[in-house]
Length: 346
Image (cartoon, rainbow, N blue to C red; front, side, top):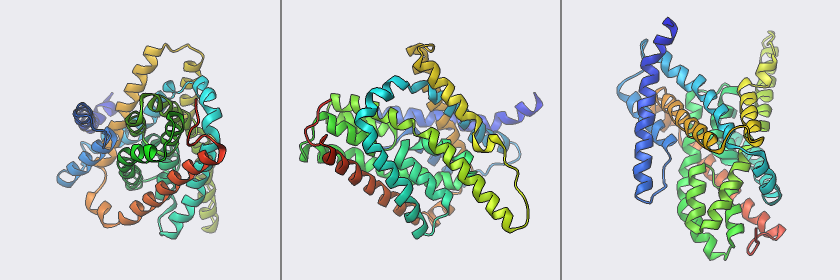
């Protein structure tokens, strides 16, 4: 109980920032705008607060708890929004495109990060955020590779910056290319990152395109599972390699390779798919998950020095721009190659 009380001040600050971010997001949506999601708003509010008020012995424990433990709990609840039946229905349209976009992100993305001199954790988070599902993928992978708050801030900033551009540009390009609702929905669902951005982009084109883009986006979310397992294994391998060079040994546990929160994510997804979680409850759990994720990102912002982020932020932004552009081009090229674009139907 005493330890729990120590968490309250810092966690409360993160939750208040999250509530403010969600409110600002709602104002944005009521004005018909979808430029910046609550996650990014919360992170930047946190960084602004950090500039004037650094975490201290009173607030630091709760801020750390929110950025680490609450983040993992949010990922578990996110599983309730993923119905395997939806994945199977949409998969026959989206799987081919997703294979190529994911290969682009994790193959070429790693080379781009290395060429720019970024550390592998920052590069991996940018690649995962671009290739899978924005902030959710970054949030899921960050703990297993032991990413710093600065790594996470770079990943989120680089990913969401170009989402904002896509919301405006995609519908214009879609109409210019004469894409059908299905072709555009698949393109938006596989190339735009954050869920809110996918929804905004899809429905800006048409209602049918928005519906299909949203389903494709949910299918992309499933890639979180193999990505987390792969990055957990890579992190263990790199740690063993580094410690072997130092003449020391590293203990490898099942937990380090197969994170417990992914089991929770899978369990929630399975319960939803089997119909054991009612649709209304699943929707409520998704809402809670998103809010807790916003709170976790607010906590990450509270631990991030904005000046340090700006000093070395050009390379991550360039990385994000290059990999986002490649994914956009690869996705539409594959659609044309397999005959879905320009006039494919559902």
